[in-house]
Image 1 (cartoon, rainbow, N blue to C red):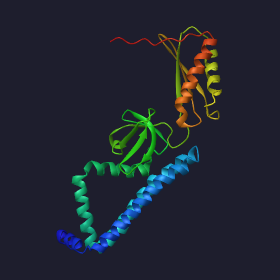
Image 2 (image 1 turned 90 degrees about the horizontal axis):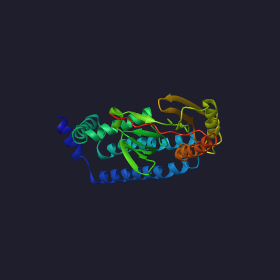
Image 3 (image 1 turned 120 degrees about the vertical axis):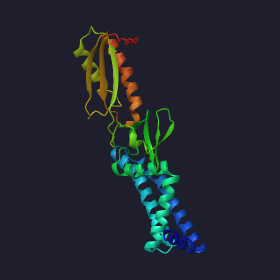
Image 4 (image 1 turned 180 degrees about the vertical axis):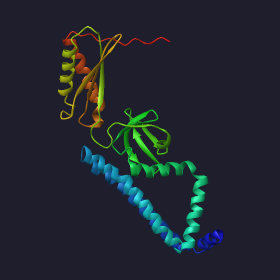
Length: 266
């Protein structure tokens, strides 16, 4: 009976209905392209949380448009009776289940992503060894740009079986850590205060966030870890470089030597 319902529904499709459906699909596709062009440009005029929230609007609007397109196109092609809709959507679900299993998996994960938001445009994430800024979120995959300016496409299906590290979690606060390895014989309090001053006086530092210097003793010396926040997450690499250069210079003025951790021999 389901096959007869589907056959009758397909036979009722006219050329006029097909043209109207194509026009609707093209209109929705053009609207999606317009949103993808406008939203990043509007977001670029803002900074901090405002920029991240505006960028997150694009994938949500895209999903709404796709759902709206399906709702508009189906009644144009077939009479929206209960039997016709059950037949069409049942056949579509069966075809997608067999032919696009992996795609459907990523598509469902994409819907979960839009709901749970484990990452948003503007977030710095690490997935499966790839680290970068989320530039766009599609229905199937997210695109991140690495520090080397490589675009990496990560299917949302990675959500199911991979750990996702999110550096800033939808905010403009991304902690950076700079490490210094020093010889053990020195004034630890003086060095700690010196490295803290180096971080606070950097032009890249978000000074209203805490700057923390923690240290741990190793058999070969002392490890100092300077934890601070850059003004913008995208500045993290310039920020780390600035702290490293200025920190090394400050340590030389204190006559404190840096050491290299020995390579363990198996």
